[in-house]
Length: 200
Image (tube, rainbow, N blue to C red; front, side, top):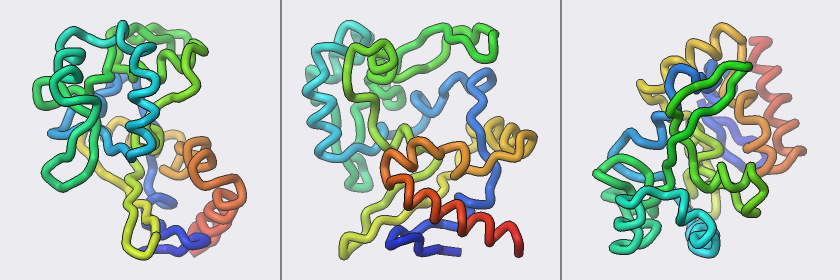
């Protein structure tokens, strides 16, 4: 079912399906799986390029070589702009590090080099909206209409299980990225619709 939330088309499963990333298990595999990079806008490519000098030392030699050859982004087979990738899968901005989650160290987790710099206060730009909003995919349709869909992917099965255990839905897990993109008033309206659906 497609819902119209203040002019934004929202797939109802965003409000009903369980989801909560479980980095302890998946270790950020969405950064390195698949056959294309992360969807980006022209404005985001500008931000990536403007901050490239800062992030450059964080990148692997292979990623640097790809960027030198084809730039930070390319047009994929579906005609969408996406971040460049290494060896047909890894986003060029993927880095690996040990991170603390709930007091436990998760070894060799995939991270976004830009987000890591952002969290250190070394850049004002974090990462593409498509990454922050995943597993929601944003699609710009004709006549300026925006549509939000839930992208199901087998590597996120642990996130689905954790969502079930903790009773967290997709839209709840992505509250802050959704507010950042569409605003607090829009998110409150989304919550109201979700509550009405729960009563059915």
